[in-house]
Length: 160
Image (cartoon, rainbow, N blue to C red; front, side, top):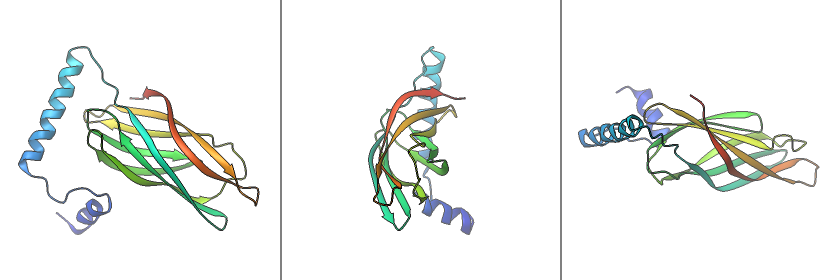
C-alpha cells in the first residue's frame, strides 16, 4: 500500500487494512443483493439528510450535513450538487450509519435559484441512484442567502 493510498483512506475515514472476515461479509452482502435482483425484487436504498449547519464568514459560507443511510444495505455516497457546486463524497455507509460532510464551501448566493440539490449514491452492485433534495435559504442582512436546511424530498431515481 502506497503513501498516497494510505493518506486517501485516512482522509475519507476508511479502514487502512481490511481483514479477511470483512471481505467475506462484503461478499455475502453482494450475494444477498444479487439474490434479491434474481428474485425480481429491486431494493432502492433510502438516504436522509439528518442535520444541516451553515457557518458564515464574510461573504462566504460553509455548509455541513449529516447524511444517513436509512436502508438495510451498504451504500457508497458518490457526490452531491449544492448551489451549483459538486462535492465528491466517495464514502461507504453501512446500514443505518451516518456521517458528517462539508457539502458546500464558497460565496453565498444572491438569490434562491439553487432550491434543489442532488445526492448521487450507489449500492454494492454498482447500481446508481439520485435523491432530490430541497434547499431552504434564509436571507442575510447584506441581501445574500445562506442555506438553512437541506432535506431529501424524493423521489429517489434509479439513474443507471
